[in-house]
Length: 562
Image (cartoon, rainbow, N blue to C red; front, side, top):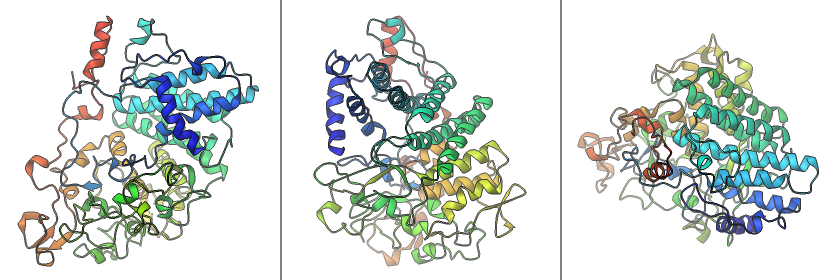
């Protein structure tokens, strides 16, 4: 199957085209000819062509998808040159494209003509609508309002091709319909488990998509009624996966990210398989012998002490003057994610900008072998896992109000009970977080966020650390200000060091003192500033606006970018 995916990712792009504008029309060849749409095997083959686009996992070659530093514009990383918010309207962009929408619509149309049982037609129609929903979620997440297309248009249909943007709520209502159809009609099992889209995969992504959209509408104050509807959809979808009993949390947290094979993993709902000579990546290498963008002090401090309390109120916390103290008596996920020794510039070839280095994705058995370096890595990559579904459920329940202990026990506390983690359960007493019957409040909490929700968001951050969720989370919560290095200096601080211990380092210590925190981005011009809410949406590229104008239509620009 993997070889087929590789062939299709090349051949389907060649057949369907890859121009940047959405006017691309499929050539009238084999894929639109009656000779192709004749059996279910061909339908399945066409569906595989969507997989590399939506299930990138660790990417390929020298890319590694959204994982680790694939996405650094957030408060988890402290790089020497922080990724900046977009400042200018791009002349062109590959993200404003409806090629994959058109492909999904073509797929949906052709399925109806294939001689198959009605059950098969319904299943594959669900698959097509699932991929259409996935693409529209990406478009809405990026641009907000977008035109909705539910059929592949001919290039002569100018009015249809140059439709005005429709409100994101209207589009996401259609996306919800697509997900609901897919959840009802996609098979519970179809193909190799963990490598093929089935009902559980649809439901898991549904929980992700509508948690994002529900909270986005809520915190950006766009439509509170729809926010509730979408959050209910997210909670329902996550609960369906939980109730199915098909998945449990993996016994070893780190094994999910550093194993040669994920076949048989009880937590993997969908993953991508890698193999030497066929498909490899480089994520393992960047956790191995390469220099890193290090974790921020803020990220390191988000991990609880092993008594289940925030470090600011836990008597077990030993402080941060040594790496041993930092790692002692903490949530064990911290040592499954970060190296328990400092890697300071000039004192380690694989130094970290902050001194704190990541090992979450490193396979220990291959780190000295050829496949442990370069772009030859062969560890399998998670696409979506049960742990995320559990935290999606908890957050959706909390956002809807009235979260009860049973909700926490079915979600957050399952993650905390993972072997090797074994943190005390999170309790809710009078609507407040508690551990061992004692209510607490993190003094470092954002006071605009209720204390119980703050703890659920903390659990999400820790459980999904370095998995590429943080920017999306800050965006939907309307909290991009967390990533402002001037307003939040702890995201531009790293480990505490003494200059005498590292006399030759070029790392900058705060205030040029003899000891203190590493300041990775030390130059004023390197600071990342959150200056305008307009960056919550990406500007429409100029060439697309002109295409509309040339066709006698109007494509409006996003607020603040006019």
